[in-house]
Image 1 (cartoon, rainbow, N blue to C red):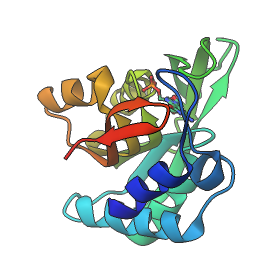
Image 2: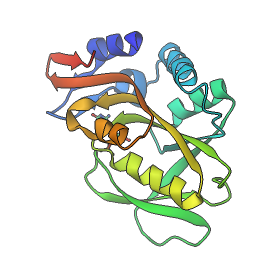
Image 3: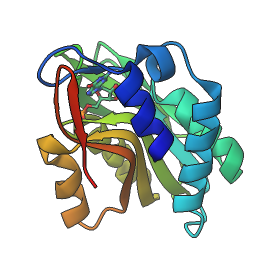
Length: 190
Ligand code: 5GP
């Protein structure tokens, strides 16, 4: 998506070899024009999937998921992060290693909100090593729901995680795909 790539080039900050800061338009301040275009693009990419539920993980996936949900007419569900593994039986639960904080979280959704009849689109802001996605897929499996696709705002292709999911048959689409990044030089996959 051209506008997303332009924003990343103009405002993205490469903080280290593997962290891109996009607080000015996606992760803290949200550029609403960009968000609307992202939602349009996600709706276009998955128009044939009969999505009934969009699932993301708190916090930074929620805005993207909500915007896409409005365009697609699908409810949005976000998995909550807990530090303890002390959860009751009313939830589906899995463990995710946080890329940005370096620690494990318990991630849960209520069984009331994810059903075996759901056709689920996963949405997140970044794809790095794929831990968050793997956790969300686990929740979908536990519910017996159908995973119809994955929409990622920014895929860091150099980790190889996105291509691994694709090779497994996951329909994974990213709005911007970064092939390599160093300070002052971000290269997108064509
Ligand atoms: P993964 O689980 O794929 O390793 O990492 C994905 C999660 O880590 C995303 O939900 C996102 O919040 C966070 N993340 C991964 N890479 C970046 C990055 O370069 N910048 C920011 N801001 N968040 C990232």
